[in-house]
Image (cartoon, rainbow, N blue to C red; front, side, top):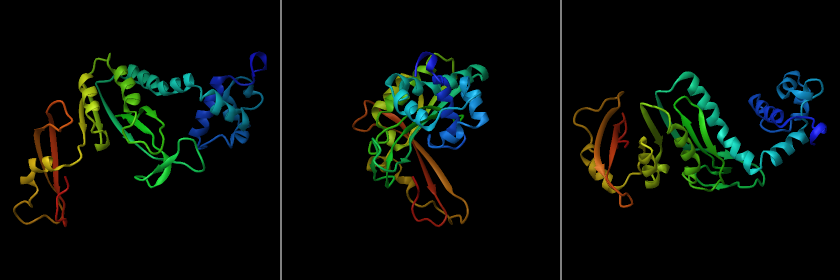
Length: 261
């Protein structure tokens, strides 16, 4: 509805959507019952205060039609960053640490974009997340279930790098697992002056670099303590444009014949 016939403002519907999930309701199926809740009516505001909040059908249309529009999806993707910027402006920020990782969101039924993922052994979505050192979600992307873990990494990382580019920080850091060991990511982080630690998949060349650490240490092995060693060296894979520093961690655990690298 439009004009004078509008029952609930869009920002009120958005608050109902967010606060409903914060209260533990995963979808809008319970909206009819929540619409009568006094607190939810205050959250939505406007006419809802004296009447009721949005119904399940109203919330369904809002989420599948209004929020699904490209401009609204883009605004939602930027929203977390705006909140985090306000937090940093109020509390100050000395350095930033970004952690990127993918996760699994199991699906049921024939949902658009859902696909079988052999790694997670289920039909799912495969979202990508970027958190900071405070546990705040900087940005995320919902993706098809069968994409690679690093698929579309630029859409998540680049806007966050741009947000922190103008801040006067003592350091910028990035961490990720081996799924993100991609030369294009290294180059982007170096261009943005980020220090980074990204796990490398093992190969024969890397094993040769630390071969002297892969034999059991001299002496009686401990029954309780882990023996831990570090080695660092320069390494250039065939797909890299230059050498980069690699740090290897070798751990000998009690009761195990071979080290963990």
